[in-house]
Length: 72
Image (cartoon, rainbow, N blue to C red; front, side, top):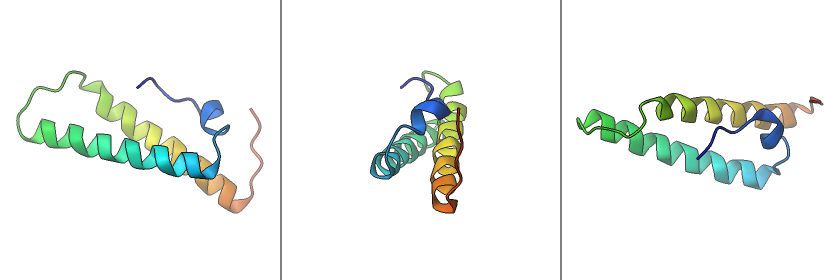
């Protein structure tokens, strides 16, 4: 999956964000399990990318809960 930008996340509705958040969390869990078991992961930078994407999604969810209007 490519890097997800804030402007793309802001276009999603709440259901889509929650669905994507679950997908990224499960992928992160898989990557960490593979790394912990001593396996060679294809892209070591992917874990960092997934963590940042999860943080971006959570940021937009919290903005919407608080009613903040962020324009890009």
